[in-house]
Amino acid sequence: MDKVQVLLLLATALFTLGLTGVVIRRNVLVMLMCMELMLNGVNLSLVAFAHQLGEAVGAVLVFLVFVVATAEIAVAIPIVLLLVRRKRTLDLEAFSDLKG
Image (cartoon, rainbow, N blue to C red):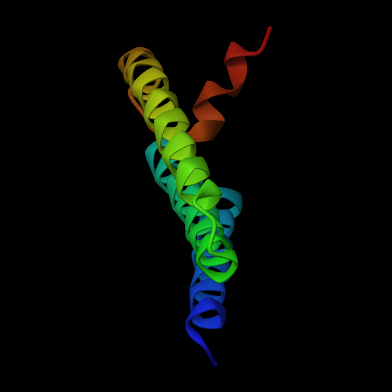
């Protein structure tokens, strides 16, 4: 196995672990961390493909994904903190009554 295959295997494992965490866990913060883990798996696959093709486009896309993920967390954490102050729990089921 060459480097690219190992990186893609690791990226698949990261993405699968993150997806499993999002599906199984009901804790909002754990779900956010698992989504970040999924994004890191995607980033690793982009870097692997960029390395294989010898292009810098993959690195630029990874930077863009990092910027979007940072913005996502910057918006999500205050929302989660407000919901936790209101409901006193991180369980996702407690927030289901907030539907419109």
